[in-house]
Image (cartoon, rainbow, N blue to C red):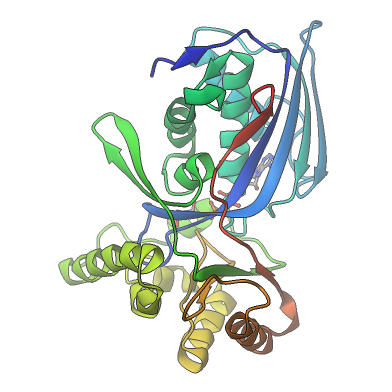
Length: 324
Ligand SMILES: Nc1ncnc2c1ncn2[C@@H]1O[C@H](COP(=O)(O)OP(=O)(O)OP(=O)(O)O)[C@@H](O)[C@H]1O
Ligand SMILES: N[C@@H](CCO)C(=O)O
């Protein structure tokens, strides 16, 4: 956990942390994908020790504007890891990731907070960028499971896991033929409630089913998108959560049955993730095959869902200032 480089300490920093879609169906608490939708956090140290928080966009008027704020909690934890107290701060949040929808808003806030603290502490990684492993360890400890945190920190497609006393992740590059399309509803579901619906134990047969599909998912995302439909079947969490998000499971069933589209619950829901793809070349919003798939999604979803094609974010959290 030692920093690769210790730089002079700046007194202000800007952080950009992406949205993420976790699980991807069978990879419960392990698989995740970063997408190009971001929260931005501007942090400046205050000499008077006061804490001032401004929130624009998602969560404005809902999240606490004091030491309970998730970004501040994450920053405090990071400072305490090096034996320091949190200084006074001006924190400005520009939130674009909707809360409690299964798009990793909490991971973005936690990773953003830890990354801001790392930069203020002068901890940098190779090349002067964020000290990604340090950020990952602390953020995953706070979140409690690593599947949103890993892609938020590293970008791309990640397979996250526990390795002894620490968190580890394999970061892979998704195939250019894939374009994630998110169907975001206006209603919320907290991860805490969605996790409360899961059984204590599952059958060996269901565990074996998911092991095969999760392994296939990595092959499908990174090399053979034609396997995405088979790879997106799950028996560990989606059906158990249906009572808290019936319309999500209904839409997924509809898209799978009528459109043969690889649709899954994004994270803990209620957003639906559809892994759209083209048969050759690179997937773009205006590729004829993608246009057809998005039209079908719009028809089946109706007006209550915001249909958002979002390209994969390759790099993960960034601290453009002071580390370009
Ligand atoms: N940018 C933010 N600033 C402050 N608090 C936030 C922010 N984003 C999320 N939170 C807190 O986290 C809660 C949402 O976390 P939750 O884990 O339930 O959902 P999620 O992270 O959006 O979805 P998922 O984990 O399924 O991808 C919000 O209700 C809010 O309390
Ligand atoms: N793996 C997590 C993702 C949401 O944080 C879950 O499904 O509960």
